[in-house]
Image (cartoon, rainbow, N blue to C red; front, side, top):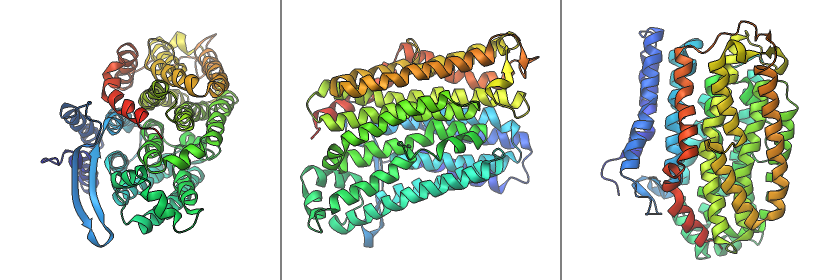
Length: 508
């Protein structure tokens, strides 16, 4: 048990900051409000660095744990902890949040209220990544919807209202099925604790107690939890809320949605579905593999057909996150037949989650710059020759784009390589089909690069202004990490390698 509640500080500091900014909003000049919000958002990376300093990668169990009785009558505990997976996502949140705020706050109205909502969203995501009891985890999970909804609806584009309602309805609908599933689990075994539920799943007690209520109950509970998580990732075909939500949200919110919030659903797959429902997940793995392939291939083709640059990057996110699902379902289908390939696939998955967060956030920011310079236009045909007028912007955007393609030497290559190395060893046919997604991804991103940045200046590309100091300082941390993690991936891989090796060795 941790004597100093570091994880509680990590989660609640952004919330306390949000309350402070909201209370003082009428007294704070806009510039001071922006600076205060960014400073408060930096608390996550500062406390995340403390967590790294106290973290031992060789210990594959939960560390820095906090556990207190909360609702004794329901056996609900305030239980927090982290492992390598949680730590990687905490660090990602700590990077994306201040970068997104610093780069976009000066362009939004009412920056104090916007910033307060963003800090609430940041703290909610952190709570999801460290909570180990379903009750507080679900509170954080649902609370994240509120600030995301208002950021999208109040500061988004012309179709933001419809997109915000669609986002909330889809997510709440999925969450309702997940809540019913966990209610059934609690009725069967009397606990919401993820660690206890995983232990009961390993020794067969959970399946036996659920099966005592009827043979269909284990599968029904599994499907309920699966649906709640599938909508959030999203797994094809539950993805239809994502393109309009990402396209209509303001740039900073889009950066957070794709960089962090999309990882919450996949985190649920690894923290909840994988350890608590190993047998049902293995039984459903093959059809789920086909759905993941649908996201990889059809997501890439959908991105290729887009003329709205923000929707193109949104569909690209579906494509890239589907690689992670592909790896997870391939490992589940194969079981312990090839532990080395399983470990590679799982390592690649976690690295891809982090690296996609960096590259996708950078691409959304670059599209936001194009949109802001062009007075709201962001079509593929609205620009031309931007490289000539803005070479610095073109260069940094090109690096983010090549990271997303998976160019060797940049961070995007490492995760995708390990995923394909693992999946080829587990389900070669699935890896072969997925390579089509790689080819189409390169095609639509290079089309974007050629049409917008090359050729004679045209449309909004005429007289395009290059990056100012704030925009450069926003992109530089992301670009630096793309190179650093592309050349020295063990900086991140070292936090997770013992964990995924243990996972691979204990597969059913």
